[in-house]
Length: 64
Image 1 (cartoon, rainbow, N blue to C red):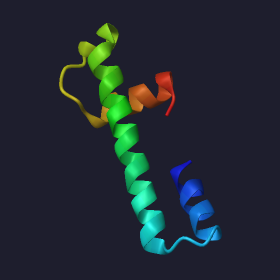
Image 2: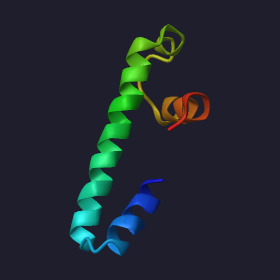
Image 3: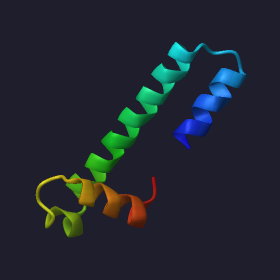
């Protein structure tokens, strides 16, 4: 989805630098959402340390 957004930004005339900045912002937002879900969901707290496995679990079960 982020790659599609970058492609769209370039097609609309953004420079590669501007498209990259947009992608970085979207990645930051996604990271914040993942951490928020982890922090607020009691069933995920049992995982303890935030790991790549936790990120995959969140993506599979909560979208993103």
